[in-house]
Image (cartoon, rainbow, N blue to C red; front, side):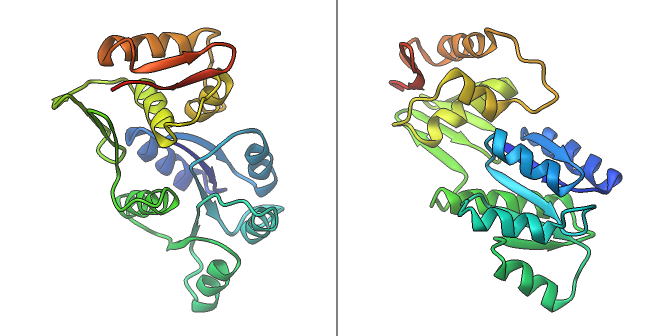
Length: 219
């Protein structure tokens, strides 16, 4: 899953990015609201982590811009502002949750997973398809009752395909979902990851729709 973090505090941002990457999230981090908004226009994210006290465009301004555009992206505010009117104001402006700094990273991860579950109208972190079960929080895959060892990018591609098994995802769309802005993307990297997934799950696990992209196949 790919997450956008807009946070101007260097130490907090570094700790969040490190924790999320350990938990197999792909993270884009920006330290001002304007840059974060631009990123949202050029990439797809599963969740936005949004600080309020940002230089230039405030977090509330970012929030208003997004909700005015009717985006349904889940938004979790991270703020040291602990007054009731700040919390209520953030939620009324369209945030889905509000977490007060300082917070424990385990709580942040739990709230993130809860928002993503809500977005997909599911009560668990588990996606099931055929004989395969994927747990997005534990980062595990079970296929034919056996655990399957996947790399971070292999897992991210499989998750993207399972999110909407009827959809066909182009190479560019898959790249946008699994790479952050600092990654160097090889011209055939998606094809290589797909090849590895097929070796582990079977040749029919992922279909290639010629000229369009990839979709989940038979599992």
